[in-house]
Image (cartoon, rainbow, N blue to C red):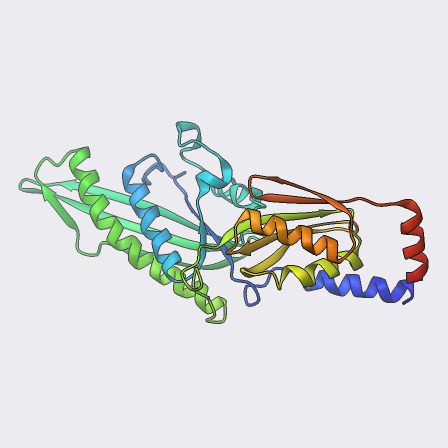
Length: 298
């Protein structure tokens, strides 16, 4: 195979790595926007109840929803309250393991009117979907409480938070259901269940360092036939370094054994390091052997 044919194959392969929701179930991150002074801040327990309801709705529809605190290792303190749109998008884009495709951004508004015999409370929830990589707007929706909620006369902050929290959770379920349906439609109506046969799916980052394109293609053929395989997707593909996000129902010990057996079968001497949820496989090369293999290829 001459140089130009090999180059064409690599270019075409990269084209197929572009994110398309129809081919891969999108990874979802749900974030709240509270930059507006009259919106409910993320430090409020009302915010937490709405967030939990939205996550549950997306999860029930079969999407993989990730927790911001785990991904970013941020603590819920005042420095992360009242965040703007740009800050929220940067949080989503910064996540590489897993790669986030769609961010669900929501806002909560609550207003009150104190009357002689009761307190009128109105709640509005707004949500929108954005493609993380392109910033493309994918849809939005809003739901309000319609007929105002009512509380007792002289209903103060604690009283208002309790009422708004109960009602907002109901509204959030409706909002989450609508946004989830939009995502299902964009995914061509095909969203697999969160787990197959009730098995827990574990997610790994697999890094193959020092392997050329031909070697990586041979490795990938093994990865998809490992027991427990669910799906995988590329994070970064370079000439001698490939990183993928790999989902499987097997544990780390068995995956480590499978990787070692695969490398032995392929006669690729390597060292494997594991930390957190990341396997790093580094190729050990020998100059004379490499020259011989290159001569065979050409």
